[in-house]
Figure 1 (cartoon, rainbow, N blue to C red):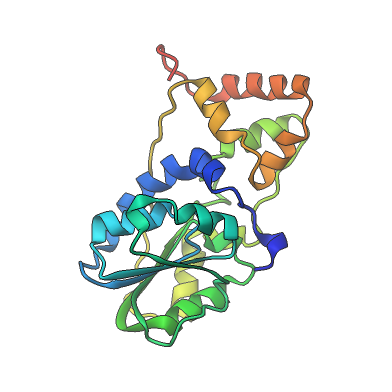
Figure 2 (figure 1 turned 90 degrees about the horizontal axis):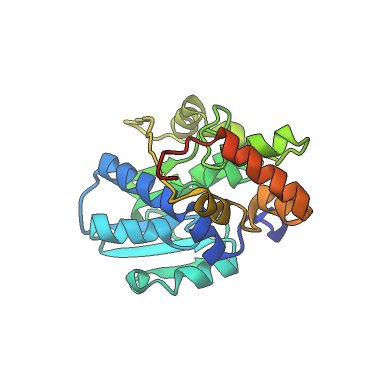
Length: 247
């Protein structure tokens, strides 16, 4: 991935926006995967290390490597106390700098729709995984609206502004992911839908978490006038489910 294709370069801001979501879904994903303890893991597109932490906490791995194209995300991942054992490096999911059959598990969390050539990335995962090992990924179902930022996208659209989807968003459909793994030669391929709920303390909490200046929608919002941001906030208030206590 070239620098121009990197959507997230601020690890702290990404944690504020997506960390609470990625941790919840990551826990469920790893419980479902259930590959056992003491294995060698590769976290492909590790970002700021949120999912890497979950691998360590839940899977008690023998070793973990993490790779991501964003130097800033990798720098943030290295600040996490739980990831001290991880060998992080900057690199491309489509050309993994690891030897053939060198890991037990290769996982890709919330990444595959951002990869220009998903099939190439999956083929690389197949190459580095040992015979009998596992390769797995999860991604928001973008065409079906399964994106945490959907309320923000909808509010922007109602104002005549459209935030672009990632370059390979169609691959996030369940049947498309199944096809990717089948085409890469994996056996015993399984897919499932994971549904999660995340709660925000208030509209302020939702706003502060989701208008950070990263990602395509963040760049649009950063360039909006104060009055336009007020309109956006009002439209979010109208569409979000808000309880009596403001949550």
